[in-house]
Image (cartoon, rainbow, N blue to C red; front, side, top):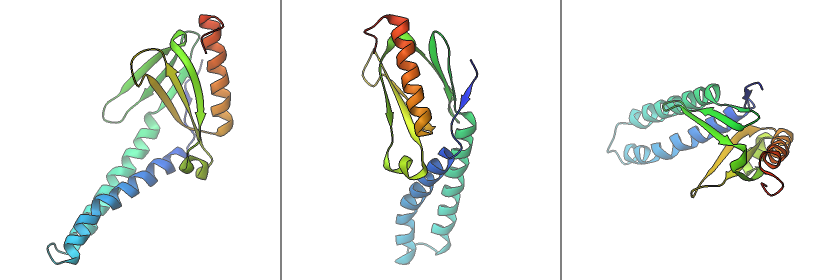
Amino acid sequence: MTTLRLHPRVRLVWALRAALLAAFLTLPLAAGAYFGYLPEWVPIVAGAALLAVGVGHALLRYRRWSYEIREDALYLDRGVVTQVRTAVPLVRIQHVDSRRGPVERGVGLASCVVYTAGSRGADVRIPGLTPERADDLREELKRLAIRADGEDAV
């Protein structure tokens, strides 16, 4: 099987989140400048630096994110600072959802969430898929999980 990539529009979602976080973190500095506690250039420089780091991280995150479906497992490879490689054995899959939040709907994307047997929070999320790809992936993983572990796998 070939390595699959996320849709390029996910970069926009991640960059928007970075911009909102930069604005939120810059607000206290802007208030300090407004009341005269800080020079006026401090929130501008800090906001620009936070935005640059956040957008850079979003772009690197996109380049690093990939997934692959093999006959035994779903493999995910992601991470900028810390590389994370995850193997989800098909026999451990409990159920699979396709999900579209408001931001994802706004840019025409969806996610696929794979829930596995195991400890609390034992799920993986594949973001940045077209709605059709998320639905196809959900059905494919469901079919493969049933084949791997019998009729009551999903």
